[in-house]
Length: 117
Image (tube, rainbow, N blue to C red; front, side, top):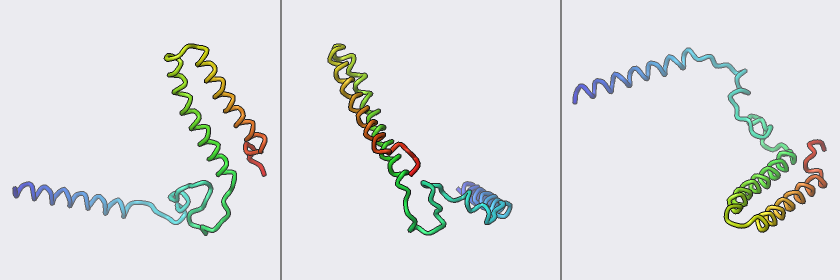
């Protein structure tokens, strides 16, 4: 039991020495502020939080979520091909693709796909 306690203390001492050496030898400067800060939608987290949010980021996110959910709905249609005959499957697939195309046309018509103002 005493040997285990000595080994534990030795391991803790060695790990503390290595952590202390890494703190001393690491090269940190104030110019690394930008590299160490997280990047979220073009915001600088060190500046004021009350800046206007770009609507384009929001629109691209909404469009991505809509089409991501629609892609997730396509997989059951593929599985449905084995369970039904071709005519029923083609009608369902055609209806679904038409809904996708109408949504894409509406987004294009509303200029949501253009990045410029």
